Image (cartoon, rainbow, N blue to C red):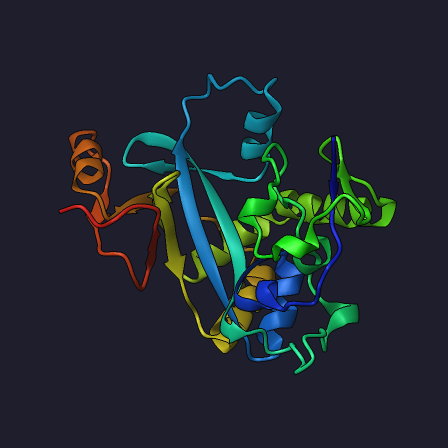
Length: 251
């Protein structure tokens, strides 16, 4: 199966950004004074998961162990460039003013950055005319058709694995130890660019010990009650600062 695509330079993907970055890319982004948030979600982890399943193996590889109360969890932590409105590098003619140094997530768009998740045009910001049978092949049988793009995608995914220890240390340095229950949303930590850079430097210099005890934040009372019954530390919040929800607030 082939997906055909050609960029129309509409600029839609360059507005209202949430770009998943590597640690080094986050350092560069914050060094320019731009915002980088930490987003966290967690899965209860019994230890009996089938690691022969590639999706489960990927989940383990991109998370670090923690406990919520006495329940074993795996925490996924993302570094995300956040910017409302047009990207600070977007030029008036919709070209990228940072093209040669843009993050890998920008270089691979509209491909799916996470493996085992199908990429569908309907979930991308690109206009309908960016897709068509007379355009260059973007993806063939679920894989990038272009070798250079495939290599960039591989490096992006490898960084998601390699950066796990550094991100765990960074969270500890920032005293961030809250996660959303996977599938319900994302807990957020929103340090200023200068705070993030200082924490990155400190976590690397001191080799900060990652926090082992985490707690859960949720905007759903049913989730709060379920976790409280398991003696898991949990906090009920409203969608907004500190929490991005996949569901309407439930009280």
